[in-house]
Amino acid sequence: MTNKIIAIQGNHPSKLNPLTDTSIFLAHEIQKKNYKIFYYDPKDLSIINFKVIAKGFFVKFDYRKKKFFEILKKQKLELVKCKYLLIRQDPPFNLEYICSTLILDKIKKKVKVINDPTAIRNVSEKLYSYEFKKYMPSTIFTSRISDVISFVKKNKLSIIKPINGHGGNNIKLLKGKINRKNLYKYLKLHQYVMCQKFLPGIANGDKRVFIINGKVVGSFSRIPKKGSFLSNLSKGATVSTSKLTKKEKFVSKSIAKKLKKEGIFFAGIDFISEKLNGDINVTSPTGLKNYFDLTGINLAKKFWKEIKK
Image (cartoon, rainbow, N blue to C red; front, side):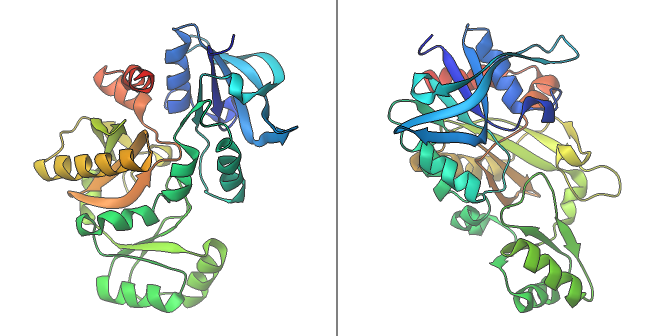
């Protein structure tokens, strides 16, 4: 069974939506090659007797069934027995996440880990976008209330979101006079935040770009639902086909090249009105299932093909 096991470190399948989830889509594809899927939660990762062990379960996915997953066997597994290991849990990039990357660092020379645990620890999803600031709208990173107020005064409509947030959660639109009390509570809760000039072009959607092994392999548009400025699919956005502009292709290829050098194999980036919105998704990029349903192009096949290279 050695070398025919794929481990997935992620959120429990019962918490996932099979219609949109990328982890399930990737697992389902590799099952066709007779690989077994071992699933575990990052909190169940340990070092015991100097061996990296995970308490989890072997699972099988089947899109044809209402209950799309079947737990075959619960057990503890020494992770060096796996061929590949996918880090797929949702952010936040908190202490649990950091510790799991440090543990997986111990075995990455024996097991191919995607994305590389050292790399995702170094590539903070929002702060890393500083490397590409010339392609972004006006942006600051801060924990100071005075910085936020000054930024909004200068840029008028502005977006504020936690540095370690995900899925469109806790993103606010700031405009007019700032309620200092509410802003103080927000900063106390989330600490460091990202503030960005609001781009009205979001009404027409953003573009999600997929990067696999240093290559730009596909894109689609995500359109916010009526009355919303959030393009996240988990917030009710819908998808449509799109083509990248010449500028977006250039920026995407530049980012893809740099991410590969950093050790990032799979990533997602987003554009609004040809501007990079500041999220370099490397912890658990999403959208492959939606892209397949929209275009018929199976990027999961591309993912596994590139890994085997």
